[in-house]
Length: 181
Image (cartoon, rainbow, N blue to C red):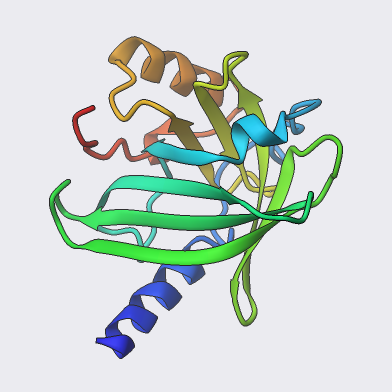
C-alpha cells in the first residue's frame, strides 16, 4: 500500500511540474497586482478545468486545499482527485507552498518532495474570491478553480472565454465531473 501511495504521489507531482507547453502567445498573462493571502490560500478550491496529462488521466473532482502555516510566506498544499467518478478512489499529493512575491502573493511554488516542484501564477481572481485562474509561467498549464463545486455553466463559460482571450487553446482543457454541493 505504501508503494502504491508513493507511485501515485510521484506520478501526480511529476505531471504537475509545468513541463507541458501550449500554443500560448509567448507566455502567460502577468500575475494579478495583489492577492489577499488569507482569502486565497485557505480552504478548499475545486478544480473546474485543467490541462490533462498522463498522471491526471481519469482524474475528476479535483480539489486543492490550502492549509495556513505559521510562516507568513508559506502554506500547506494538498492536491487530490477521484479516480474516474466522483465516488472513486482518492489520489493525494501534499506539499509546501512558498510565496515567491511576498506582499503581492500572486506567485507560488509548491514543493512536493525531493526535487519535484511546480510554480503557478494567479492570473485572475474574483473580487469576492469565489474563483481564480492560475497559469504556469510558460503558459503550458491553465487551471480554473472555484469555491463552489457546481459554479454553473454561465460562470464556467465566462472564465473559459477569459482564458481564450489570453491566447490559450481552450480545446486543450478538460472540465471534469464535480460532486454535488
